[in-house]
Image (cartoon, rainbow, N blue to C red; front, side, top):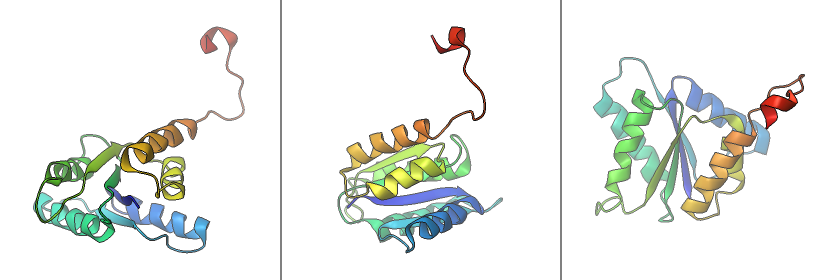
Length: 143
């Protein structure tokens, strides 16, 4: 099973994990959240993300979902991608920025897929989960 770690600004990661538990009725195994508070030392954030990743590492890879590209949670999470060959880690890591609830639900529902397949399903879920409600798209724009 692919491990999933949500890394986001406080309290977003925990809130998203709470939504998962509410939706599924239980806390799914292999899913963790790490909230990164403002002004936390990046070394401390990295260690907490590393511990969460180790906690979901079943050897099949880890998908990390972050909130904003270029922000501390994404930067800290990205450092894990280089640890795949590390003797203490041994897991490929993919990181996606821009997490939303449809993306997260797709990930949890398909976490038994291999890492690359799950990553693609996550991207599709995130994109397909964004829609403007209550309006029709003018024909000229939709082409």
